[in-house]
Each structure stands twice: as structure tokens, then as C-alpha cells.
Image (tube, rainbow, N blue to C red; front, side, top):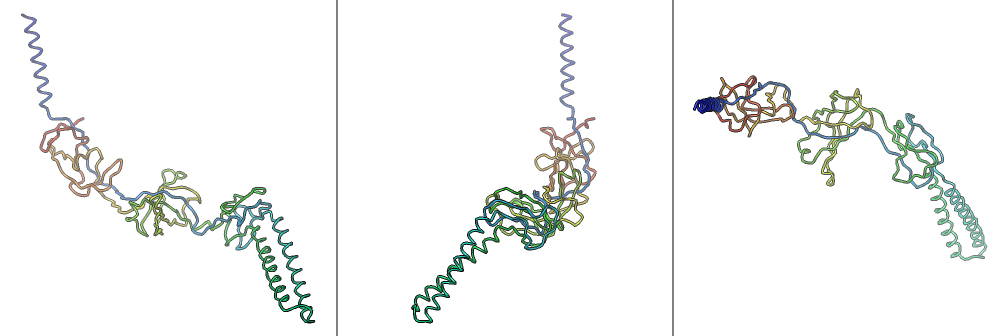
Length: 330
């Protein structure tokens, strides 16, 4: 009997403790709404290139016999940069030139015969026509010799050389890159879903792996009117300042700034639930709908419905309701 009474007493104590724990307000963690900068931006990726530059390649398929310039060297328009094997073409040019000279001599002989009434006028016409045709072939063969010389299309600096003696190159190949090292720009790709928000003159924040932790700037300079239907993107060129540390060929991540607020109301993302927050007032929560702006991994901008310094519940527990009492978790 005594054991039963002790067991009943323990059960009563446990029940009372359980009831007390169950009836207590839920314990919650809170965070204060703060102010700070908020930026709404369009993301893009791109690479650094000169504003003025060109790829230089061969006009025909042939073997490189001589490279005449080096990287970092300044060249003038029309200057030879490389020579290709033109021996066979030279032989053809010499052959056609010999035929042209023979046709010209034959024309002179026929003219003499016509003047002496030995040959007909028709023979003279045929000789003139043949001489013109052979001369045209010879001139074309001579012009083709220039295709075996790779020339600079404009003045500039040799930014890169991908040509070695002995290589067989074809027309799609780029043997040299020439241009001016300044000014520079970033050619980036913007998704077609975001391009309608991008305008010339917008500020751009850049990040490059070569400069970790450093935020670089640019400006939207040009938007290509026609997009790429395969990649579903538009080309956007970003102008870089003259003192940029970025180098030609570097890849960057770009954030084109659409809206920037210096003193926005910010709360942690964990405070949001179903488009609102729970504001703590004297150990009672108030369910409040808010308008959200920029959402980031560490903070969310609140446009309306919350003020700086108000306390919000983090990770609101399921069943938390407007007007319910809470306990602050240590």
C-alpha cells in the first residue's frame, strides 16, 4: 500500500510538471531590425577586353615560314606580321606571267600581219581577247601572293601571339591579337529575363578572383539590340575606368545596380514567415505583414511594415499566433 502511495505521488508530481511545462509560453530567439545598405542588382558574367582590338588571321591555308613580330611590340597598319609558304603560288604567278608576256608578243605579231593585210581583222580580235584574259589571270596570281603575308589591319600593340614557325594554319585561326591596352571594357552576358531592367549609365560592381575581397566598379556603356536566342542572353558592354587594375582576358562577375539604398531596414531571412514577421512587444508577439525588397543570404530589406530597432522572432515556431505570449530564449 505504501509503495502504491509513493508511485501515485511521483505520477502526480510528473503530471503537474508536464502541465506546467506545456502551459508555459514558447521560448523564442529574437533579432533587432537594423539599418544598412541594400542593393538590388542584375547578375552577369564577362571578360575584360580592349575597346579597340582585332584578331589577325591568315587569308589562306598554308604553313608559317616566318614570324616577324613579338608580343608587346607596336605595329602599324599594313605592316607584315608573319609570312606563309608561298613557293607554289610563286611558281604559278611566274607561269601565268610568262603566258601573259607570250600572249602580248603574239598580239604584236598579229597586229603587224594585219597592217600588211596578211592576217584578218578577226585574228587580231582573237589575239587581243586572249592577251587580256591571260594578263588578268597573271595579275590575279600576283595579287594572291599578298595573301601569304599576314599584315596588321590597324595600328596597335601586339597583345598576344599564337603563331609558331612550321605550323599549318587555316582561315579560322587567330594568329595575333592587336589593339590598345587602354581603355578597357567588360563584355558580359545578361539573361533575357533581366535585360529589360538594364540601362546605359547604370553603375556596376565587379568581382574578380585575381583581387579577392576587392569591389571594382564599371558603367553600363552599350547594350546589343539583338540577343542570342540559343543562349537566351544579351551582350552588355561595361566601361572600365582608366585606373582599373583588371587585365585583358580576366573573367569577372558583375552586379548591375538597379536600386541602391544606404539606410534600408534589414532583418535576418530567418525572421520571415508567410510574408510577415512576429514583432515582440513586452513578451507578446504581434503578427505583422511586411513588404520585402532585396533578399540576400544574410539580410532581407523591409520596405514597409517594420522600423529600425524593433525586435522580431527568429525561426517562428509552428503554431505561433498573433497576441501570444512568449519567453525570450537566453
